[in-house]
Image (tube, rainbow, N blue to C red; front, top):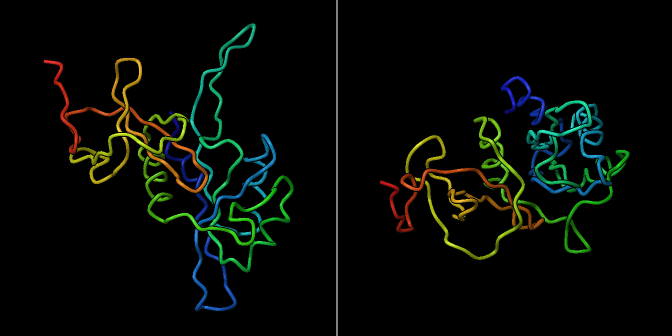
Length: 191
């Protein structure tokens, strides 16, 4: 599991001086070269650009030992909070490919989706990458540390999981959830 002191390194809330105070910054998905996410994040930190790279812990088996490694929850993506005019500075980072958009302009990600992911990571929940789900049973968590979050409920390996999606990049993460803490779905109790 990721420690709190390490969580702070995943999200860099460094304020930036913007030349026009009327320009509002938005979250964007920055697509990176394969396995360059952490390198891009370090460069963005150095430039003072607010970014977020959610990671998860995975046990990796070598011939002689096991080791816990940290991998991106969304391989190939780093999230940046910028005004659209700053995109060239972001794209100058080695390993940055493009900002996800419609082919002409970058498309912003809803603040709520980024804040939800950040909240998952900061709370130390054991998150895993999950295939994007466009359909399913939408639920709201009504109790516990994730109270108020909305997402999709799925069942994997006889366990209930809550799936949170980022629509623009069609990627999702999942976390194990107690079915008694959700509303909007009739669950069978295990009693």
